[in-house]
Length: 456
Ligand SMILES: Cc1ncc(COP(=O)(O)O)c(C=O)c1O
Image (tube, rainbow, N blue to C red; front, side, top):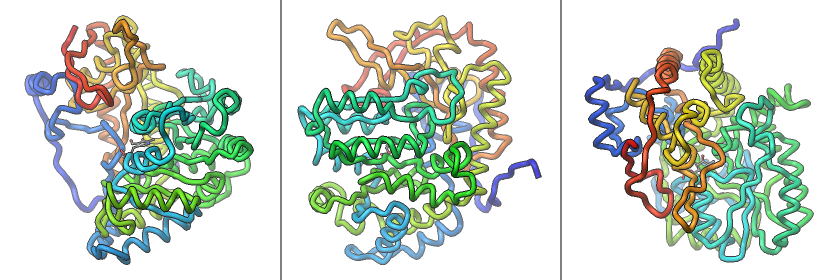
């Protein structure tokens, strides 16, 4: 059959709230035009993030009941450890309460002033954790990744020539770890090819630099490799994922993505000495090494989710629903980052609203309008999130001005997606009326979470 269906039945449902135009306008005002400050109850379709927003399966909920809540040596930890080790091959598996906790531990240990961490593209929390340690975070996306309109198979790749130049420039002794984000979230949810992971790994090994995967969306990346990279079409996705991990020395993972759970993460690695120091830090900041900030039931749900995410019917449905959204928007002339990513569609706000200067945050303007028109919550990934200031106070804009429509796993059906398409097209029709925003209050780091805006 040609129709790709949701590979599940729905057993439990949660109502969503319909609001009037006036109610949404009031909500926007009360939230200072920052959708992070809007109560979720006021949102009709929540595409803020695919992180921690998944619907768990009956087996995962059953696992929650089976969770062993012993403080030390819980059965659930050993199941979790076995699953993660089987998948990644790493010796040390350290649970954390989410991805950034793994990053915090890793960069506290290996970061610091004078150090430099390359990545195909740092996610915001990764960058913040690197910089908080005093080290420099350097993005090295491939040139293809910089062109939002180019259709290419692996736009998430690392620029390996630039990586070698950076290593020679700063010296391998100042690069404690090289990161690789799969899929490349801030670069548009674009996949990284196996060839690129292999090549990055061999460069790192030549210079004695450990390679760590930021593995949040490893399964989506593996499925893209299966579909797009020569030689992988008939290989099971699990084996592709195992090969990806085999080129790395460790990983940070937010289980809130491809482990299909609402909370959790881990830090994994082969280095015994680093792992011992990571566990010591874990005890201070997260908890005992066999629970690390999670309940036994969470560890059960992660172990189960790691199996379910590798089901190829699931991955086919998952990537196709995102692609469908992208195709329909493209057909209506809406500018999106091409091709559709694994977990999200990224609207190209610079092209959508060419009359709004980057200093007035076109992405934020579009985020606000999607909510105003249809109660859809999205997130700006542009100069609000990544912009910096020069000493004279002028804005250094981000590389791209994007609005991400992230699709939670197993939560929305095709008719929800059809509604989203209708709303985006409506905003596109009225785009000339949209105006920019100015920031009236902001925090020194990760300002997008709490910044307050007003219309220009
Ligand atoms: C690529 C990437 N790395 C790291 C993180 C951080 O994970 P967490 O939100 O679990 O702290 C995220 C979260 O969205 C992510 O997308």
